[in-house]
Length: 118
Image (cartoon, rainbow, N blue to C red; front, side, top):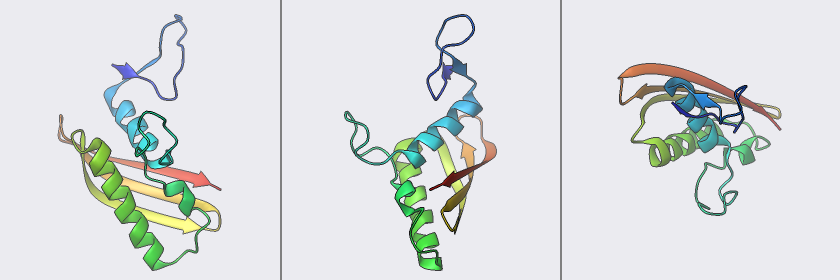
């Protein structure tokens, strides 16, 4: 078991744990929505994708965002997952991201979706 994100205390008064699939999803979420510079001891961690929520919506931005997501996930979670496909949609002040990946340890294919509003 792994530590749950966001950090919590469970009903027994211990640190809440997450099963592997949930923990991997939580790690992906941390990489995507952490702004570089936000973590003092690891200032280059994150993707900076939240800054794109208010950017103009066009094909070039979608392609750049997909590249940013792919490179960030490969950099920070490349030993844990293999990213197969990324789809990014931006509408008004909303950003939707769908990621298909394979868990390297189990070879299980997963799809996760995230949505953020500005």
